[in-house]
Length: 523
Image (cartoon, rainbow, N blue to C red; front, top):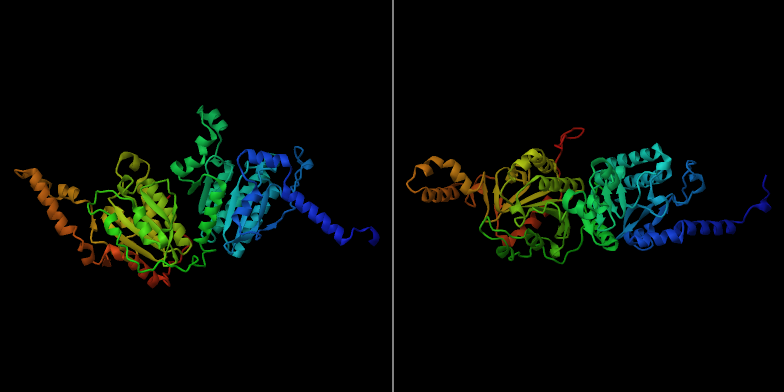
């Protein structure tokens, strides 16, 4: 039995604690830290310092170590086990995070590492607070075998359980390969940094061995690939500091959980501010292009619009802003890209955004100027019916306040899909330039009056006359309003005020939903 005299004093124990804590925070060695810097990357703790308000981060399981004895791991048991977990504040609100530390086992995931992540994910769900994952790891720790794979399974199941309950944000700041890539894919938002981020199921070596294709890591799964081509990344940045600043900004636009509304702020931009500039931004001619970003910036508070998926599927624009201090999600056709048609990627992009807004109580404002769905064999063979139905399903399923504004043309099935009255929008507003029809006048005249045009002595003159007739009878600005499919035709200068007034009226909206386990949306 140890005598009282031989026990270290409490002060000695505290000194030992401070030394151990300092060693855990310093990392495995100065050489490992230098190697991280030479890769052009910050350390995990530096990233957490940038994410959280100064002095608010509280770490959990700082002293956790692995218990593996395979392949010499018993001689290497650093504290943290390669991941830093805890919570802090972002603009005064509680946020949870975990950050892979590439300096420790390359940030690879083993049993203890995974259990730390499980712990912080469970805490985030229980506290009803956002979760941010700072990924910079080499995947599963091979020396720990199947327990590492089981650790990933625990992360994935928690991602799904928290989906639509708390905001989940993935920030890729290094390699993310193999099974590890599925966690970001299950979260609400993915950030990447050009030049240091990489996501791929199989790396270049495996691709070369299986297919013979030569490709670099950046060309296979770099930030530009996923931001511009695959759509797996919502945001792409040039450096880590800019990236983490935008993560902080995104959090200010989201509620802490699905039981709360997004944070509202005091706004110096009057809700009834006239938007006269819109009269000169949007051309009357339905085939003339313009940049819908200018329309959005006129409508939202202080022209502050946080765009999501900016460089992917550019023919539709989605993002977050505020109107009268309250957060809204904006979905808008973009006539400056592919004439604003809906295609597979645009449908996917908008559907995912609509579902996110609905999950987190963010009202939707839909700006419509759409000529239809993109025709062609490639679109049909790749499933435009199935993918287009995703956007239709997302809108029909949404219970948040929904306001549609028809700027110019709205043709065919695309009009229905873009949150029309018939699928449940609360208010449908239209400018005097609106043209709502099955198709454009030229195409409609060629179908409806084909025989008369062909039998005419002057087919071109007959076609022009029939086009004019179709426009006058079925495409005049009041046609849909007369049939109750548009609630009001407004002066474009009143657009901001009309939306703000409508959102204020709908703020307490509640729509009961059918009793069901879950829907079965198209995939």
